[in-house]
Image 1 (cartoon, rainbow, N blue to C red):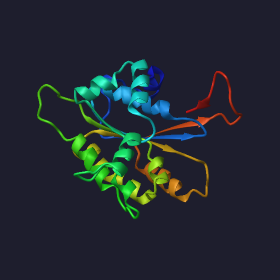
Image 2: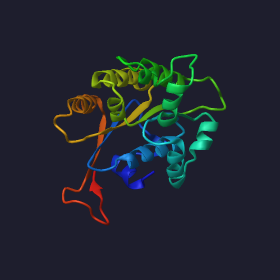
Image 3: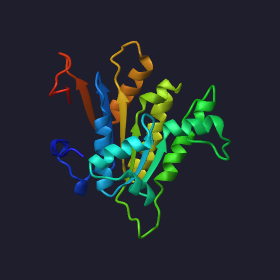
Image 4: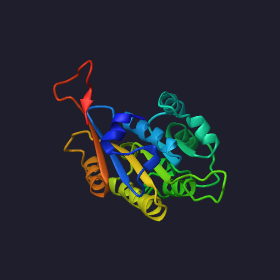
Amino acid sequence: MFPELNNLLNTTPDRAEQGKLTLLCDANTDGSFLVHHFLSFYLKANCKVCFVALIQSFSHYNIVGQKLGVSLTVARECGQLVFLEGLKSSVDVFFRAQAEPHPLQFLREANAENLQPLYEFVREALKPVDDGDAAWRCPVLLVDNLSVLLSLGMGAVAVLDFIHYCRATVCWERKGNIVALVHDSGDTEDEENNILLNGLSHQSHLILRAEGLATGFCRDVHGQM
């Protein structure tokens, strides 16, 4: 968790806002540090977190999380964190029989038109639980990153529909938050990514954009936000 970013946003884990969609966007740089920030932020805020991780493994996020003062292993064991590891789950989709539709079921379908199984996974993961021993503050959906879904064959409209339904459930119905990272390739010919980025920009309450320096690499400063 980065105190400077919290000061800029005028927020702390003790008074995190609810019902918000935050869009993280990176261009010519790696914006994953923002994902790590919000993951540690909401875990420290005692929120129930569903993390759809399509880029890195659980161990990677856990190592970075420990440096930021949180343990993903402990959070998962106590039920605070529900972690969908895309890299590992993709193997299960292809090589293991599934009794029920897998959240990433679209990987096996040549003409998949929606992400309903993934939405059902999120809805179930963040379902309110009447348990006095685990009174989480609010539900949070974190996605790293949505652009990967386009690379895997889903259309921008299907991804936008997925976020729309997640907003209806997480933000509006359950007064939680959504944080999603999208890569901006800067390629005007990448129509699907542009549709996704523009669509999410119009829906978001907050947009954090990380960019590389226009003049190139610098030893002390790697970009701007």
